[in-house]
Image (cartoon, rainbow, N blue to C red; front, side, top):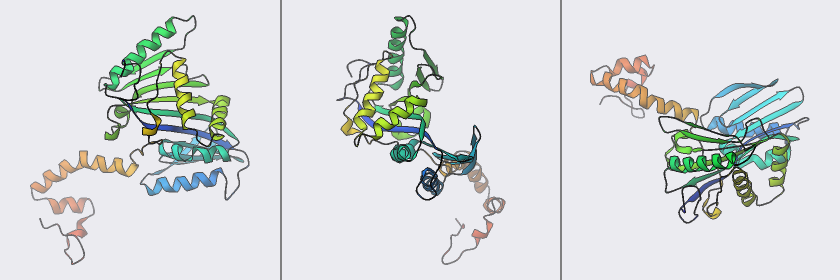
Length: 291
């Protein structure tokens, strides 16, 4: 790395590159091959992964959400929102089927040899200096938490384009994001529609995605030399499902209590309280809790 603000492709690895979020609508959807049908397919996939189905509503739209998929209807209009891996894998199909794209987020995730906090601090200094040197420079805002979370915001959230840089591991707590800095550009309204269709028209849009991200941050004083794109997975790693989070909660919050009760000879009472006491009966093809 040449300095904390300029990436050197030989030392940094581009681990992910692509679409991270998309919101689209269609006025008259087809029953079997339209936007709602695609969302339903993705919706079921999210449920199979262990995500819970919940009600969802926004601006008169009513529907359901599950994991990285949200689908809702308002009169004859269908709205679909995809995030994370669902957006990364299916954004092209959404753009093809939709009448309008009102939001599209592009992201690049970089694993660097330098601590993410140092990198984001360097970006903050450069962005602030760039903004101060102009009469009406772009807004620079940041949030740092005492536990390590750090996010730098560039531009106004109310504008048609907005950017953020943050420590991806502290946001997700997933090990494969350790040491990763996430760069996101959020396009909205007509600009989102323009970017979505421009990328969709290109059979190989990844270089354009990298260019859009670099150009946005360069226009805010943060110059990124994108690491070699051949090293990227070009997708978003799946986040934890609702089942994964429930199991993690069991391990952290419940298991210590159960182990303590078991040590005091109360395993049978624990199983009964959990309505698992029927598994105490040993059989040739069933589990036994005799140990």
